[in-house]
Length: 403
Image (tube, rainbow, N blue to C red; front, side, top):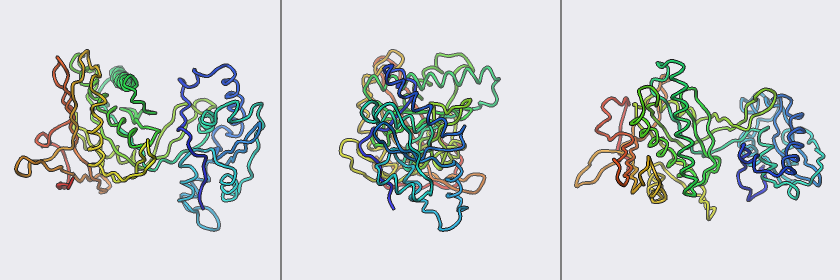
C-alpha cells in the first residue's frame, strides 16, 4: 500500500509574511477555507489527514487526533497497523491525488467530507497556498530533517529579566543571520520554536542544499552572538552551546486560544538526540550528530546517502557563498568549518567521534565541530573548540573515523 501525493509542489509555508503578501481576494478565500476547516478541527480534537481538490471545493479526510497515537501504540482492534504506510501518509503534503485519497480513506475507515467553496482550488487560489492552510490542522512526519539547537549556558541562574534579555538577544541573532542569508539568495524555509532556554531551528525544505544552508545559518547565528558578546555588557548577551543533527521528527501546530497558530512545533527522535547532546556540550562547544541519511539534490531530484563527514565535506564546498557577507561592518573573506581530531602522522589529521552516555544509559555518537571566520579589517571569529580544548568534555569512548 502506498500513499500517492500530488508532485512538484513547493513545501508550503503559511507564515505572516505570506499572509501579508496576499491580495484582498486571496485573503478572503483563505479565510473562507480556514473558517470551514476550523469547524472540522473541533478545537483540536481532530486533524485533517488528507485532502484532494474538486471543482468549487475539496474532499477532506478528518480523523480524531488520537487515532494516530493508537496506531503507533498498537492499541487498535483487528489487523496490526502498517506504521510505514501511516508515516508515508503524513510524511509529505496533505494534498493527495484522488486514487491515493480514496485508498487512505479506506485504510483508516473514515468517510471523506466534502467542502463546498466559492472558488475553484488550483485556479482561483494556488494549491500550495491551500496546502499551507490545511497543514495548520494536520501533522507532518519528516524522516530526514536537519535541526539545530541553541542552548543558553547557565540560563536558570539568571534573574527573569536577564533571561528575557538573553532570549531577545538570541532571537535577534537568529533574525539578523537569516536576513543576511536572504540577501545572498540563500533562502531556507526555516522555522523555530523555543525550548525555554534556547531555540530549535529547522528547515521545511529537506534538500541537501537547504540542510547545508541551515548549517551555515547556525554558523552565522553563533558569529553574531560572539560579536554581540564582545561588545555587550555582562548578562545581556547569552553564551551559547549548539548542536546539529539530521533525523526523524513530527511537525504540528499548537492551539493559541481557540485556533491553531501559524507557528509550528517539532518533536521526535532528532529533538531528543539534540537535547541529550547539548547536555554534554561545553559552553561555546558545537556538536554534530552521527548520521547516515538520504538527502535529495534540489536540481536533479537524485537521492544520495550522506554520512556526517560527507555532509560536512559538501558544506565546505559551498562556503564561498558566504564570502562578502558583512559581519559587524566587516566583509567575510573566508570561512573554514570542519570536524576536529588529532594528528595521525605526516601532517594528516583524523576525525574523532565521541560516544556519550545519558542518565538512562543510552549512548549516542557525536563529532566536535569548529568554525573559523576571517574578515577583512577585523579580527577572526573562532567558534567551537579544537580537540586540545576538550579536557572537560565528558564522554565514555572515542574513536578515529575514516573520512
